[in-house]
Image (cartoon, rainbow, N blue to C red; front, top):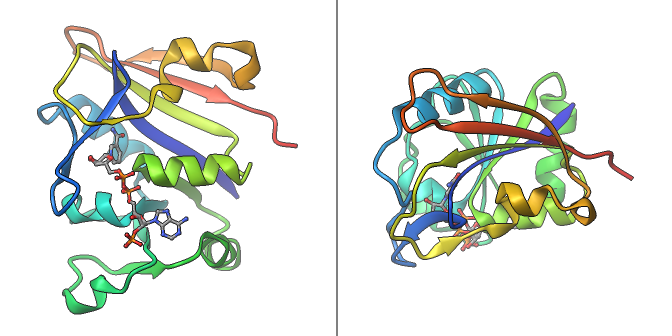
Length: 181
Ligand SMILES: NC(=O)c1ccc[n+]([C@@H]2O[C@H](COP(=O)([O-])OP(=O)(O)OC[C@H]3O[C@@H](n4cnc5c(N)ncnc54)[C@H](OP(=O)(O)O)[C@@H]3O)[C@@H](O)[C@H]2O)c1
């Protein structure tokens, strides 16, 4: 059993560009290196996302998909992938522990969901991609900026930094860990 947050963030802490209705996108054009890294990390495991993120991220093959939502709107729509919907993170974690504890649970966003799981003190690892540059955005999560995670009081320790192959400017991925209470 392992619970990990995976995220991508630009130099100003931007993570999303959303119209607060149906369109909830990333602020940057498709970054194939980061997408490949995301796929490599999460493939074969379980991913958790919020309802808004699910509206844009329709298809994730070779992964078990858990979606968090307190509304029932999904019941009216056909499902592109075999996803499991939960209205409560306690039920989601119980299901994960009972049925999927041999897999990693990746919390893939958005910020509402990251914030929620960080508050539960169950996440011991963050895998954060730094997307070079600044982008038009209206969803931010500055807490995941490297300079903020590096503050001692954050409790996170930098484990490793890698540069995604072939990227120019360089796309760095940092892994941070924390000892849970
Ligand atoms: N850069 C990245 O790595 C990354 C990753 C993922 C997403 N994003 C971006 O983030 C933005 C969306 O983020 P967001 O924070 O607005 O939305 P979100 O976290 O994707 O979804 C929020 C929704 O999820 C449900 N939810 C959240 N916490 C819940 C809980 N504890 N229990 C039950 N349901 C819960 C609620 O759905 P209901 O309203 O249905 O109740 C809530 O309205 C998009 O722009 C997306 O592209 C960025």
